[in-house]
Amino acid sequence: MARLLPFMISLGLTACSEGTGDSTAPTRTITDEQGREVQVPLHPTRVFADSATGFDLMVALLEPDQIAGVVSTALRYSLPTGSLEQWESLPNPAGFHAADILALDPDLVLLSDWRPPTVPNLLQRQGICILRLPTPTSYAGLTELIRFSAEALDAVDRGTEMIADLNRRREALANNSVLTEERVLSYGNYGAGGSCAGEDTAYDLLIELSGMQNAAAEFGLVGNGPLDLEQMLRMDPDLLLLSEAENGGHSPTLEWLLSQSAARQVRAVREERWVILPVNLHSTSSHHIMDAAETLARKTRALLKGKDS
Image (cartoon, rainbow, N blue to C red; front, top):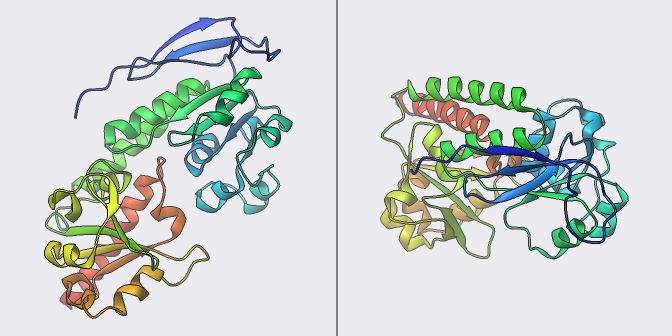
């Protein structure tokens, strides 16, 4: 993995765009690991997020009164601290629409790296700063995401503490050699075809942190993509990583697998070797990937202990 460049900051008094917006609040220019310059508020006071990743980072790095709102779907997939009532009262528009966001008067919007540019460009023309958050696919990428976000949110000390905590937890997971030979397949199938996560994905990072091997990456797959049963049979993973339904409880993917005679020939299905995570933990792309890795490792150890007894 190439070594990421450090983030640099320069101070300025420019607005976040050269468009028609009337924002004159002072800004800073930060430079990411790819050398791109991004303007952010000098001291962000009203931050909006379009995803669970952005919301997770806001909750960890900001005071509650600095959080202007979040897209409603992000609340379902996030793992925030604090009471549920606290976040239910937070403005949470149903979609990522310029009018809804402008009504909340944010000075900074945390944006998913996959978000199309139309609405973000409109917001920038109104003087609102935009910060795109990359999806971490390596541990270096995860720590850089936190460092970059902490710099942008004027919360460097909190970011440093978060990274130190992640380093300690990563070391603790790495010291457990019981799981190193386990080959895990992160798989989903909701009736319209199967998919898996290969190398260079957040799931690949999750599995790596748990101390296990990504069966799809070993099979030569890169990124998130389709996987049919014939490929799964040839891959023959030791363990399946699955998600609960959005409302919790059962796993639709597991129900589908158990209904297929071919799938029941896969070792992980035949021997009932699977770990099912809550949807928000299973899908996280923030620092909570470490929570997911710890949960995966703990449940796998318990599963293997039960099989050996």
